[in-house]
Amino acid sequence: MKDNIRVFRQQGLVTPSAADSPVQAVIIPDIERLKSLQKHLADLGFLTYAVYSPSVKEGTERLRICLHSFNTEAEIIRLCEIIRESA
Image 1 (cartoon, one colour):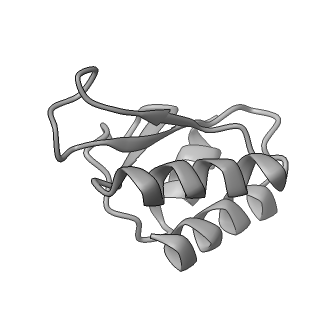
Image 2 (cartoon, helix red, strand yellow):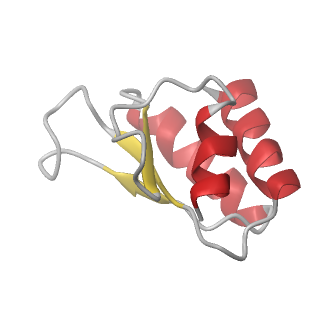
């Protein structure tokens, strides 16, 4: 699991999450862009969660990513590429 977290963190996405947490978040304060990204990822088979205010402070809406031991390095890298392309 630590390897998967390391791979995710090495992809250069800015995240408010703890460096050793399997739950990572990427701030996307544009709600429509967040919805679109989450749907696009789901269509590609990536299960992520969009978190909106009031669950988080307005302007800090985010994509929540849960890394698992069964995720491959290639999957994590591709996920991050898609997020960078869309965010």
